[in-house]
Structures are given as structure tokens and as C-alpha cells.
Length: 144
Image 1 (cartoon, one colour):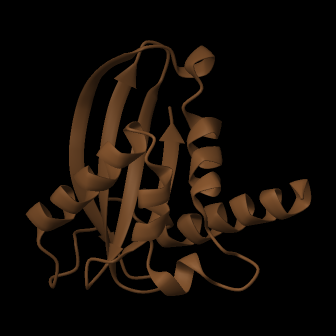
Image 2: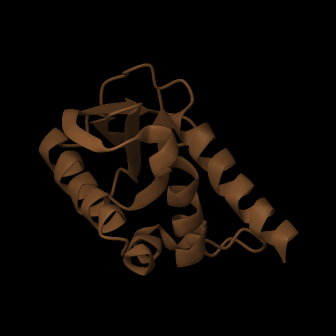
């Protein structure tokens, strides 16, 4: 069971890493609206912070969420959050420092909403990726 959990979290991380690789603040794809990407990302951000992991998992595009052997469930979202939002490591929330978008084209064109928050010990970015139809295709964290 622990192996499957590690594999699913690893696969989720790998998919997200691929989606976010090469995203050195490339602009959004022309077909995407920055306000929509941020607003949709804000919904996901709010659900993550409210610990509504079932809702977050349900928002992931079906083919990604139900890929055989790589299924993504609410518990996987919780495990991802628990891995990055460790109070002893990041400290107390101070403020949201920046919200912006970027884009990428590999493995498919997509836009990413980035929410950077300053904590007393670290800065944490939550990145939410959307395909051109505004389906959620990725969720990742980055700590600095």
C-alpha cells in the first residue's frame, strides 16, 4: 500500500514537473485569458487551503485523474499538501506576495496560475495548470 501511495505521488509529481518544466515565465497561450486562469486558480487555491481535497481531486481532468495505475484521489492531494505545507518547516503564514500566470506548450499548451505566499520561514508557491479548455491538469508546490 505504501508503495502504491509513493508511486501515485511520484507520478503526480512527475506529471506536474513535466507540465511545469520549461515554464520560465513564458506567456500564456494566446487562446487563454489571464483573468480566467487566475480566477480558476484562485478557486483551487481556496479549496486546497480549506482542505477540500475531494473537490480538488474532482477538478483534475478526467484522463489525468483516472489514468490506470496513476489514479489521483483526494488522499493524494492531501499527501501533496502535507509534504509541502509543514508548519515546522515553513512557519506561519504572513501574506500573499504575488499572483501571476505563465504558460507552456509541452506536453500540451497550458496556462499556469501561480500563488506565492510568504511564511515566516519560507516562501511557498502553489501552481495550478489548466489546459486550453480550462480543465485543471496539474497542481504543484514549490518552496524557497
